[in-house]
Image 1 (cartoon, rainbow, N blue to C red):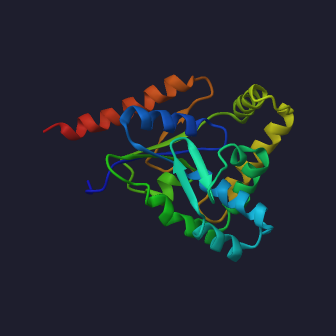
Image 2: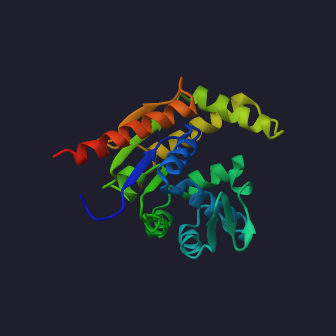
Length: 226
């Protein structure tokens, strides 16, 4: 094993619950946490505010490399403004999927993501954590759920926030994002050959967290054996 801090890499489609699971696992292990999707959402949000079209790759890459962003506890600060809720909008999610397909943008954000790897360890979630950003991750997981289950979860979240949305529209949006993420030429969404599959369609968050912790601790016990 390398002398670098261990990484648990969790990839999966939008709405699969990987962020919630990853954050909970990080808290239990006292690891750092990287929500890589937030970086792409931040690029989309900053581009919208500056009037930069989401197909102008060079300008978007320059923007990505110079983002003035800080992660403070559970808050995300962009240019000294808290944008934690702003980047969670459906429009921002669609924008993130679009800019995430651009090679220069992904390249600009690669090193920034890798800098989150600090002692005692990191739990990172996204689309290419195991395949591109942390190919030497200690534990790799592909966390997924059916599109229908993911749409229902998203609908419930929006309803709790007082936001009205049609589940059919949410389902179509998720399916469109899946298609874009899986078919892009650069770092497409896919399960790493050495990643463990975790289907959360019929699982609670608590059960999913428990499974990830069991897998990780099992690896640690294996390493400790003579």
